[in-house]
Length: 379
Image 1 (cartoon, rainbow, N blue to C red):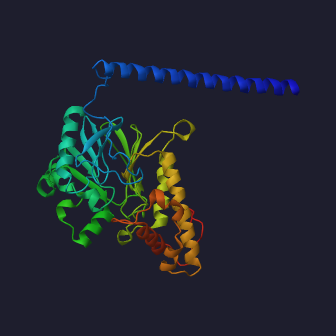
Image 2 (cartoon, one colour):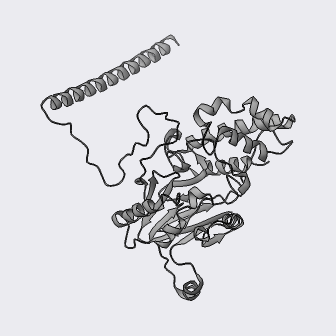
Image 3 (cartoon, rainbow, N blue to C red):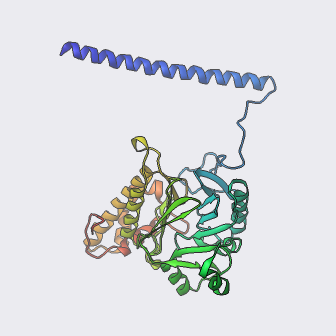
């Protein structure tokens, strides 16, 4: 036993020595690079720069010294960024827009705000010219929900596109259909837009009332899931299977607590069901790091681990609010108890269109008067 322990201790010591040597070597390399760069600058030269590509170069949306948890402040432009496979992310607008390009044309998920639509269209068309296949036209648009920051560009993006229609559908579509690309959404989205009197040019042109749907575009399987009630009752989640990119829409928000639109059928428990679905659809890489890229409605790209932590945070807050509500506490009493206080530095907002108070109010409002304290998908 003593011999075994000695050998194990020697092995640990050797391992520590190896790690120290590795870090020391890394320090020497870094020091050498620093000296080389400094010498080149003294000689009047400039350090070698990596060539920049037209697309995919990193874009710093944060000012130096800014709060890293604050929403990114863009430069007023839209920047294409290659996510993976055939899928690109359009960053810089109020909400994220995802684009898939290939031989069949362009597939767009969400269209951002109306104000940014012309700039978004210009970048989509440029992307199609430089990265697309034989067909460059916008063929399909999917709205993950019916909120203004996700459908604002519907009219401009749709009218710039076209559909390929043949067979017996060609005549009726030519006579009665809406020209341009197809705009697809859950039927609940159109119901809400009509009831709210939203401009019909922003309406989807094709509707479904499914729970899940699968189709193929640009040679890639695209899975669409409707979680019934999440941020809204028309929320969709879109997975580009081969590219391994999942568009979660407002189900995930990497800048704040999620917006729960109670007026449009959103609920906290429905949102948690949707988050669990996102986690199930995503596949992590080794040691739960990396894997499926998850595009949130707002903010940076996420991984399955990010979403698990996000879901856990929201579940804890939800359970605490339910506990207080079961005790008969009013909304104002619950707000005074600050059930989210431990997480507000990361996710909370005291000003803007969606504050911490708004979030807790939506959680409280959509929970039953005497419901189960611990959330479960079965309940």
